[in-house]
Image (tube, rainbow, N blue to C red; front, side, top):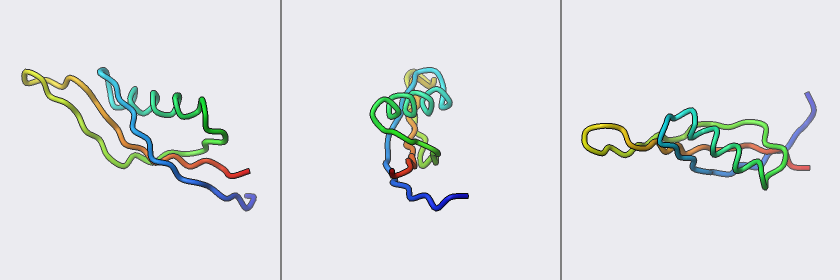
Length: 68
């Protein structure tokens, strides 16, 4: 393994469908402007409840991207 240096950034993804989709939405959007994303860590999961049911999922992630 090479000696890589990583920078961390915290982002939040959301979805009305699932936690998985919220994570994927966050990574996909971040990848539009951040190069070399190599890993993520889920920090927090929240949701909105409306009329006794889950209406929205929100996930806070740390992403690690390799510094060039």
